Each structure stands twice: as C-alpha cells, then as structure tokens.
View 1 (cartoon, rainbow, N blue to C red):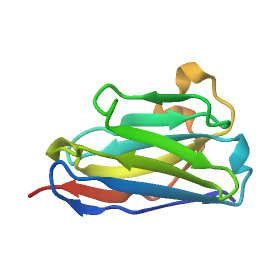
View 2: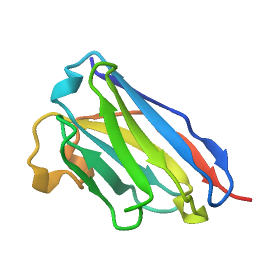
View 3: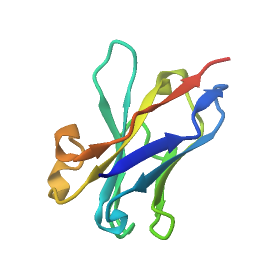
Length: 126
C-alpha cells in the first residue's frame, strides 16, 4: 500500500513563504511522477505543479509560476513544494499525488494520479 503524507502547512501572511513536504511510503517513489494540487472552498481541485520521476522536468500552473518550486529527494522518498510571495488566493487545501505511468500530456489532470495524500491546509491572511 502506498501512503502519502503532507506536512508543513499553516497560516502565513501575504508575501510570506512556506515549504510543504510530502513523504511517500510503501511504493517505488523514484519511479513516480509527483504532482501537487490544491482545492479552495467552493472550488474544484486545481493543478499546481508536477515533477518527473528524475526531477529533471517540472511543470507549473500559470497562477503559481515563478513563485512556487517543486523539488524531490529520491533518497528520502520526499517531494517538496516551496512557495514564496504567497497571496490570499493561494489559500487552499494542498494535496500531493503520485502518478505511476501516465503520459506527460496528462500530468496536469487529477485523474492521471494513482495515489493521493490526505491534504494539508495553507491559509494566507493578515
């Protein structure tokens, strides 16, 4: 059984930074494409970004490009989401997800992912 656990969320002021972590156990982490999604109250879950199994390729939603950075440490079975210049509209529950074998063209779609974390709250407010 593959388990994903997010950590690092919380309350931050506008313009602040946070780093989310997602630890993966029970699977072959180094083979997974890892994505981040978020869901704000009353809205659908949306794509934030993704990193390939090798870490050589990343893709971001336009709304977070140049502010968010995804990285991974395959030795620690962990993927990270570094967020800077946070805005109130970044407030959401953030989810990490693992994709076993989807094509890159599918990486921004939630249905491509096989395993999901439970989500963690990020609140950007003064």
